[in-house]
Figure 1 (cartoon, rainbow, N blue to C red):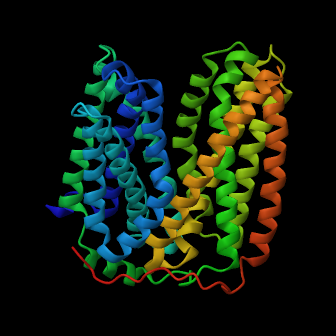
Figure 2 (figure 1 turned 180 degrees about the horizontal axis):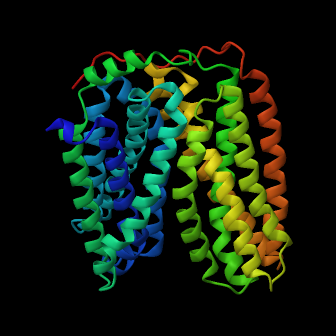
Figure 3 (figure 1 turned 120 degrees about the vertical axis):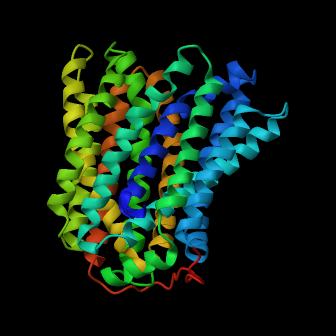
Length: 414
């Protein structure tokens, strides 16, 4: 029976379900809390903000817990935590404290799940296939994000936002069942990792690791900055409200098609070359948004076409190279800790990007100069990324010099 679904394909399927569950209910959480349960926008916003902030700490915690407890049990528990946290949002028991508890539980669940599934992919893959396999994961995620709204449509069309969240719980529960049935025990995963070899990483985070995480932090902040401003720019500058929806739809389709091809193309590259792909993709992505500032109000369609094509090419280079670099950062045995550091870094950068992007967008809107939001801050981001890349490139082949050692795995729990 276990041969029906291979372990790696089971991981892919769970990731698809998790992405579908997220897209099915998460966009409607604010409406459920305000319209469905009657809370103010301030309370609802604070609950959602807490859920976004928890992964900053949760990523590091996830790396340590996965290393000590094992991949399979944490895979199951993190999905169960997401289901339990969502249930707390559906029925608050008449007390807003329940919502904050749910935010903490679900925030921890998603951060631990991200670490666990990436660790599982790294341990079930040969190092030369990292880029290809992580590219496949990203494409599968985008398919899940496309399926999610279809799952919740019958509920949302009736303004039954609790039903959309309940659909999330059902999908997470299916994921738990798949993990329990098809994900192998940790002893089996460790045997597969031993056959594949220890990988090129080390047990300590060196100067390259610090520079790489600084790059990840900066790019994550810029990525969130683009999300903050794109809808307002298309609506107020181009008078093309639907442009944002067209952009995300078109980009999702192209990412699903392009990312696996790029992953196969770069899969045998060295760390220095992989870093070059990551840097090039980041620059292309950021430059595409910075270029929005040079399009006039009547050029909305041209801006949409440019942004969709160019930013997608950049992201297709970023995704497989970034994940492969993280997997190699501390070696196969420390992949969980490496992905924990990565997750916390992304969360911290995203938090800064959200706060800074909101302030900057308010300034640009008040000044009546939305293009400056893209040209000024996009240009600054490009300069900072270039400076950090130089440091990362110069240290990419050097031995580690910093004594940041992750906790060792203490057992091989099934």
